Length: 385
Image 1 (tube, rainbow, N blue to C red):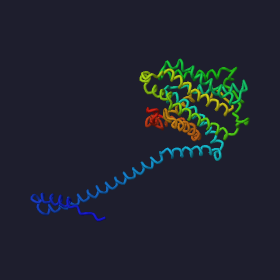
Image 2 (image 1 turned 120 degrees about the horizontal axis):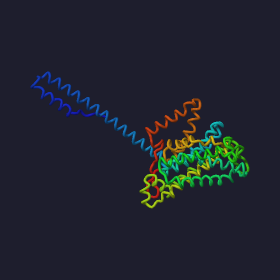
Image 3 (image 1 turned 90 degrees about the horizontal axis):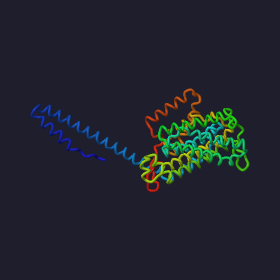
Image 4 (image 1 turned 30 degrees about the vertical axis):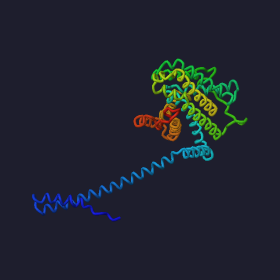
């Protein structure tokens, strides 16, 4: 394409030289004319090039936005979820037993972290003794199996009921407190449960723990292989995510969010914070009980050493790392904090240091967690998910 000569530039350079002529003579005026002309042509060239580059960048950004919108379409998200589920289901066919063992443990922690996310992430109640409910679920199944001879599926609802009631009973006096005081009370509860398990020798066998716990069975066939455990845990993980998501998007979930954001404002809207906090504690304990039963059935052995305060810190770290109130973030946080220490096993003296440093950096640069709770509409209102 033939470009037109820009007479405006020539006119400006000529006029500048002409104005300079009476003062410095024709030679200096000619030099100034040449310099101004060259400078203006250079500036014009640079501006055209910059404009072209900006237009190209804008075009690329538009194309990228279209691609992102395409990727984010519901159809593609659904296809991505199907592919992810197919991949997860195919893992036992190519993974070694060690990786399957880590994956099973990851699944149990995902259920635990989802339960704590209900209490801390949704309702905003800091709980530092969540491992106590995990222990109650595990020991309930162990005792029901070893003393009363109940199988996995018979003992599961009873153990979960005991755990849920425990969470409900703890919540009654604890909900009179807020913030740090509530955290201290729950921390104390976690330690009391661990000390009871450690010292009540006649029932819990103290530090020796309870062994020979029966594993789960399906249609009369006992599950012994890790691949079978893997699928069983995967079903429970899917169930936990589905139910917690449904509850969260319900009226109860919106009430939890309202209480977390501003308790006084929620009371003015007719929400009874005491009732909904009790629901949160009981519902979170429910999932801790399921995780405890699965852990007990998988390990075939339980002892107080598995339920220390550091376990509560680890579960809370999963929730904070993934993002408070984010279901997918909690899944990712649990996966990272279970898999990462295994990857750093070669340098186990430094892995807690690396973990602590990572959490400190996360709090500095991304305090909301890996996944920022996104906004979505539920019932005409906007709540974070």
